[in-house]
Length: 294
Image (cartoon, rainbow, N blue to C red; front, side, top):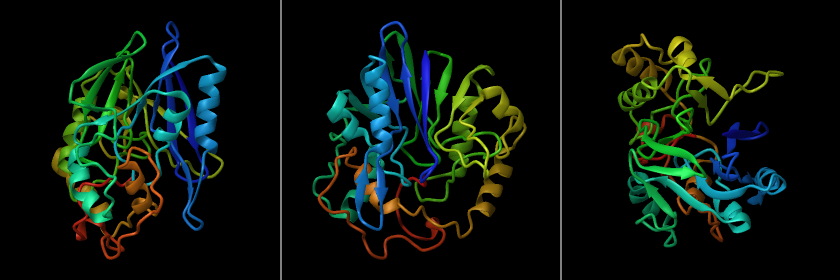
């Protein structure tokens, strides 16, 4: 297995991964990013084009374009990449819970409630492959109802926003549809994997002049994660998260991101900004459904 990391350090602090099987040269892209300027409404493909160039130059065959969840801090480039290289777009089946709430709010008739804009809706425990690399889908809800982790080659997991590097901790859980208790349980499932399992995180927020920490291990997370280590009790984690998330602002790009990402990256003609749907402070004080925070 080879893993190439593309980190968006300028805007979204998102890690995109190209995971490839050295033998068959098949690959998957996980959590791609489409650049978006909110002031002008313009989209840019700089990051996605770097991913496409890497796949092309290395003569890889793109089989999968995978989403760990519907992100609310960046637009996905899944449709753009698929239009250039092919590949099936996959996401967890619980995306249907997010679609059920958000599609009516955006009043966008092109957002399909049955999830058919995605090529594959994965079930918990479902298995597929990247070349000869086995992949297992692990449902890890808590940040959003639709979050999944991809367990590749029985060597590495790609966690999206479920768990971050040890010094960052875990995802926020303050949206209706999110749950600190549920996220705690999800992470316990990951902590049952072997300690040497590689952990590739979906975001990193490095200090100035520091390199992003994208790679960890289950052993490191269990020993030193600032939010949940192997000794953390569920009630303590829930209490800590509730305290940390008081008046936590919603992500800046939440409305543009959700509208595009619920469409599996197919760009609408207009980005709609529904009025008085989101609160200015803590997301949980408003009825905003099962959206993600990042």
